Length: 265
Image 1: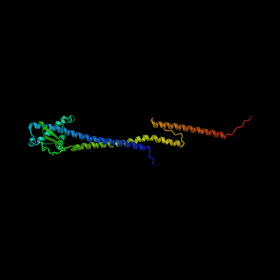
Image 2: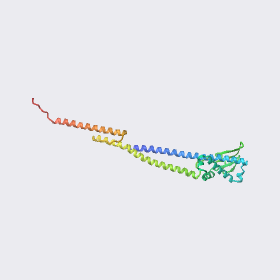
Image 3: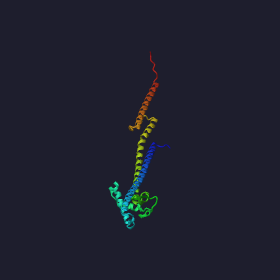
Image 4: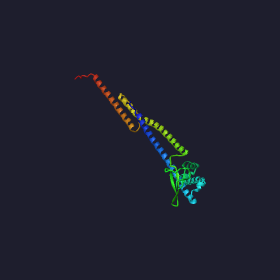
């Protein structure tokens, strides 16, 4: 079965458009995941560094970690304070100011933990493991403790997950709309490109049937329009030749039907 040019053009444009949209969607999704992961890691590391600095100052004042055993809320407020200072140091976050959401997420899910020199928990609830992100707390050229956080494993809070899901939904919706638009554009583009060629083909069949009065309308100023103009030139030439042929045959027939005349001398 012969496939029409319209179908070939339509399929080619749709396939190219969908492939481009798919590649763009995959690329954007990858950048979304990796960018959000970098953001969360940056936020966590910034908080870790500020919390370690506050713990150094606490150890300088007290000379030990006993305050965390005697007053467990001390650890909570130090984490709160370090997070606020970390936000103030970050230009982008400082414009928004610290939020209760950030504090709740970092306290509830990050599980920052203070260990003594023997890796025994002083404050916090994360058991020491080799895979944990651990910073040494140094004072007077010696390590007086360790600050740990669990390894990053993607969005951990419900709001993080909802944010990523929302972005994926928007991306999927945009990709779906782009697919529908690309199919529509492909249809009209293929139709616009194929219609003049079909007109030329129809005119050529009329010429082949002997209809030399066939003419094509102007089809533009591109190569297809030039082909239509050449077609019309060919049709006029064939029509002229056909007229001359008929006139020539008419003259011959007239001469053959007319008897020769004898002249008297």
